Amino acid sequence: MKFNLLFSLKYTRLILFASTVLACLFSISIADIDYIQAATEKEYDLQEIKDGVYILSANGYNVMFLTTGEGIIVVDAPPSIGDKIFKAISEVTNEPIKYLIYSHAHRDHIGAAHLFQPFIQIIAEKNTGDILKAVNDPERPIPTTTFIDNTTLTVGDKTLQLTYPGQYHQRGDIFIYVPDQKIIMVVDQLTPGEVPWKHLAATPEVPALMRSYDQVLEYDFDVYVPGHGNTGTKKDVNIQKEYVSDLKNNAQLAINNVNFTEVTKNVDRQNNAAITEAYFDALTNACVEKTEEKWKGKLHGVGVWTDEHCEKMIQSVRVD
Ligand SMILES: [Zn+2]
Image (cartoon, rainbow, N blue to C red; front, side, top):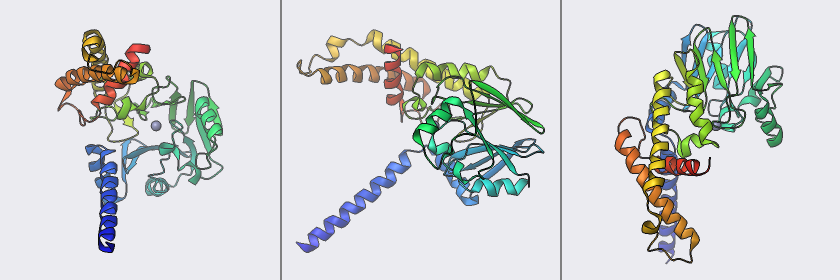
């Protein structure tokens, strides 16, 4: 009896451990795993993409920083990179850090901001400032300077244009554009080569996400810096735009073609939730089938979240 109890306890722990490992593995994409392995060998990856503009990558997250001749500008401070930011900067320059820009308020992109010296300036859009005041998180200090909609920051030989295009991902999220170097950094909009992240890049507003691709494409740039994964180009933005507009068409087709009476005929008529679910499952299946038919093999991760993408788009087509 004792032996059996111990054995089953061990067994349960083993299953728990295995499922935790699996859960962690499946929450990141294949490209992220390659990326993480590459980054762990060197601790981080540091790349000068244009004169004085650097991308620091570790654990699947990116930070951009710029030398200006008058102090460093850093964009984002993910806790998964943490104090490696200071190590990487000291590898290429002894300029002091003067500015930190928040791309948006999410902790996974700015949760190491408390590690910076208190006298630096932190810049964010007003909505991001409001969110951070409300959450009152000591690891995400409130910005010292906020702006409404857009602003331009010139320090030494670098100019940055910061623009709030609408909440494609979170209220207050901004495009960070470096016009002279033709670089744009957009965080949590897309990862080049990958399908959109879970629930359509976790957007709170599908139409804002769809608009955001055209808004990015209006800029003159040749390097797209995402919050995760490798850098891309306009081509990656166009591919993402095409995937999401296909989703919209396929969601609309499903709504037009799926017969409500037919797909709910075997469901208990008293159970409204079950009737609704049967109908939406049928819509989702129709949208998934059509989307995967075209996109399988064209982007990493097609098939993993197509159901979530379709569900989110079907809701948007119905109500937005
Ligand atoms: Zn985010």
